[in-house]
Each structure stands twice: as C-alpha cells, then as structure tokens.
Amino acid sequence: MIGDFSTVIQRGDRIGIVGANGAGKTTLVKIMLRELQPTSGKVSLGTKLEVAYSDQLREHLDPEKNLIDNVCGGQEFIEIGGRRRHAISYLGDFLFSPERVRTPVKALSGGEQNRAVLARLFSRPANLLVLDEPTNDLDIETLELLEEILLDFDGTVILVSHDRAFMDNVVTSLLVLEGDGGVSEHAGSYSDWEARGHTLTGGRPPEGGLGLPPPAAIVLI
Image (cartoon, rainbow, N blue to C red; front, side):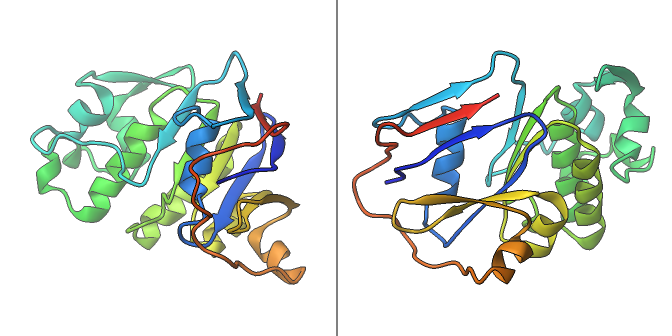
C-alpha cells in the first residue's frame, strides 16, 4: 500500500526515489506513469509529456542485429533532439567506434551492450526520463557517460537507484518510501538527506495491494 501522498512534478525536476528493498519504489514509478492503476486517488499527466522509461529488465536488443539496426532502425541518419545526426556519429557519443557499430549485439561485451541500451533509450524523443536502477552492471566509463548525459538533459528526471554517489550527482530532491506506505519529500541530494539524520528503514509494505487513498494525487506537468 502506498498512501497519504500527493505531489506535483514539474518540468526540470530531478527526483530520486529511495527506499528499502520491497518498499514499493518500482510500484510508485509505475503508478506515476499509469502503468498500474491505483485503487483510489488519481494520477494526472500533462498533455505534452513524452516519456522514455527504462525499467529494471532493460530494453530488448536483438542479438543477431548490429547497433545501427537495434538503435537507429537500420537508418543512416537519426533525429536526436530535433537535430539530424549520422548514426555512426550518434553511436560514437556512446563510445562506439565506426567499426563496432556494425557488429552483431551478441558479439559485444557486457559493457558495450549496456551502452547500446542507453543509446537506444536516449534516441527516443522525451522530456521525461524515468530510470529504474540504470546503473546496475555498468562499468565506470559507462556510468560516467550516463551521468554526463543526464546532467545535460533539460527535461524532467525520475531516478530509482541504490548508487548513492550517482544519485548525489544527478538529483536535486528525493521521494522517500518509508516502508509503512508513507512517502515523504525532501529537497537536496541523498547525502543532504542523510546529513539531516535520516536513514532508510522498513521493508515490504503492508498487504493490501496498490493504493493512493483520497485525497492523494500525483500530477506530472
């Protein structure tokens, strides 16, 4: 049960969602995106939202196809942020050499496949990025790349992560799941929150399913 919680998320907000394992972080994200329906309360989305969502299962990559096929739909050029980019140039932003872009995904290293997932995610038009544990299994080089991309992104970021240092560098406020169904909002980074004497407690929320008891509401503008 997630309850007694109302918030308004505005363009440009950079929000980290934290809580103990099983507290409902992914559930809250899916309620926000209306992938799950709350048993009560409401979720309102702005009319011009373009969402790019990468969940814990990651984007599917066809192992038999190369990067240009997987990321750029086989096209020589791709539109990124309203600009026409050459596919090889765009993939170069994700540390792929021209020789590697035509390599089947199954022949790429684990780190390269993770970068391919990010390249595919950021190729989509979006003003809201929702990232659920994006740093899992990333090497240092890819982690630094992701951080740089997020800092340059001028839309809204909602981030679920156990990587506190990464979260400190990316987010400016937190939604903390208390483990009893409550959600609290805090300005600042994870380290700021800790410095004010807070720690993660609790675990799995009480039985009873999903909920946002009235008058709870989530509004994404």
